[in-house]
Length: 258
Image (cartoon, rainbow, N blue to C red; front, side):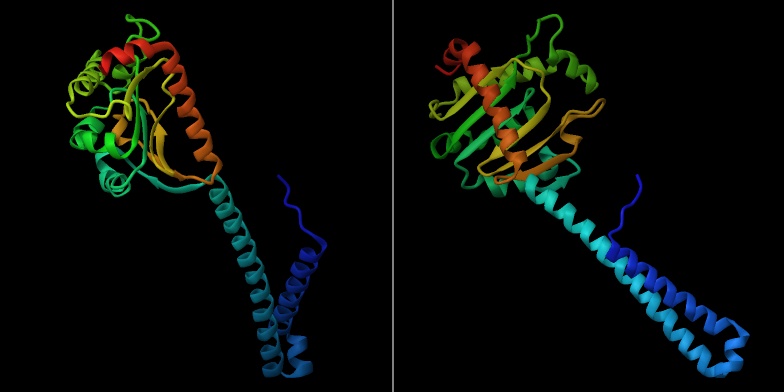
């Protein structure tokens, strides 16, 4: 792609290049030494070279600053705050700090075994202080013999059927957890292609991809905040999955949580 320069920029660059060129002539051409004296010629030439290079350097600095400013503006519009190399236990303290007084907690994943292990002791508290929505992949979708859950087991190089067992274990735990406010802590199965993992805590969302031959907890995670278009898009994605799960699995979900 050809770079485009405004007339002002062209004039600035041409002027400083010309000044630099004249400076080199005064320093290196013997005729100028004879006319003005070597010391004077070299002194003026060196000053012109320094001025020309300073002007060119200033242009590059301003140009680079504009590029960085544009990038910052893009990140700000998106609401992108941080990028972590890993998730789950690797950034546990990031979750803990935000969960302390959370009012809305949404999470979607496959079996969420690490989420259960890390936070099961807080489920009761959350159910009385927050609205909690948990989406687990339906381990029998699109079919029992060829499910997304089993395929993901293969992609993570783990035993086929492991995610299915994790889903059932999570549901059983919730169904038997005494004192849980089941009106505010709901678990549903979703039937869609599991494109991303997502963990919303109030006005922030942790999310990331599923990668081939990598455990989910070892893949990158991005943090976005409310006010950027990424937060709105991701929350809309979760709400759509939740509504679809409600329509197709409402009866089974009620049975599980009774």
